[in-house]
Amino acid sequence: MTRGPSLRAVSDLHVGHRGNAGVLDDIRPTHPGDWLIVAGDVAEKTDHVIGALHTLADRFERVIWVPGNHELWIGSDDDGISSTAKYDRLVSACRSIGVDTPEDPYPLWTGPGGPAWVVPMFLLYDYSWTRLPGQSRESALQDARERRVVASDEFLIDPAPYPDVAAWCVARLVATTTRLAALDPAHPTVLVNHWPLLRAPTEVLRHPDFALWCGTGQTADWHRRYRASACVYGHLHIPRSTVHDSVRFEEVSLGYPREWAARGRPDPLARPILPGPAHPQVRWIRGEEGMPRIARPGETGPDLEEER
Image 1 (cartoon, helix red, strand yellow):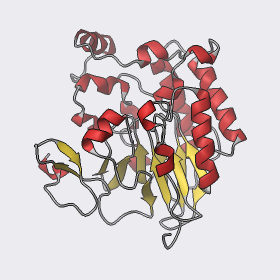
Image 2 (cartoon, helix red, strand yellow):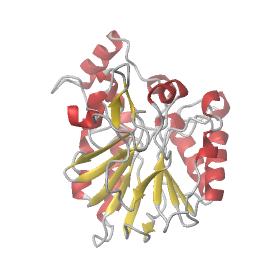
Image 3 (cartoon, helix red, strand yellow):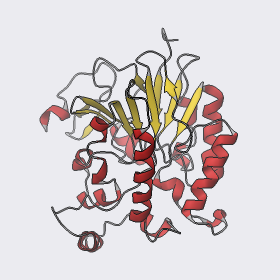
Image 4 (cartoon, helix red, strand yellow):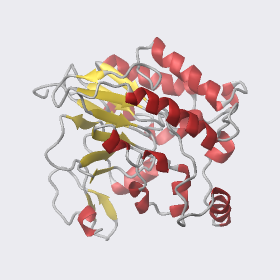
């Protein structure tokens, strides 16, 4: 046990994937008062999502969830409903097991490193992170298709009654800024969103076109505007600890087995967010064969963040 409780975070567990079926066994509190943020992409099927969150809610004092794109995917078990309806169904199910969602009052963390508002957000993306500056959405999507880089969201997310995901994103941005503006400014925030709030983390993507499905330029100053002490995200499957404008950003994803088997897993998987650590929690180094991988606890080596 640690000396006190902590606010922890993890994302992109993909528990419906055969190779990640046992990952929940590795996510446990180190103190009875620990809270856990789950920043999206738990699974595609509703029963898998709620089952995993129920397991975690039984272990942690409080669990806070935001949806990722995979939770919004429509499958054969979704009875032909839209992604918006599926999201509402997930929110209702989370409330029934005591899990906080972006539709609930923002909880105030008062443990070590607090007080701080924990702000779960559901913001989506609007295709504004184009590969070329000033490029139109239509042109950027066409270029991505020609390079065979197209997110499965284009086929599996049904944003009805919105005409497209970008319009749904606008509605989410308006609703979220209204709530953020009403928060007591006496306390900082921990901003939580499945998609990164800044474009900078997408600069390390193997396929730059994929940034189209990773966020929106409308959130570029939110970490400053809303007094963030930390920002938590996932989606990229590139676990990192970075600092932008003196604000700590934590990409807390696990990802698919083929990914974490090659580059390693963060240790611990449920990363402490508050109290803030003295040093970056995830370091990337070059392995013996020159390939980037996550450094093991206490391992030395050139930090790839410093090489950039």
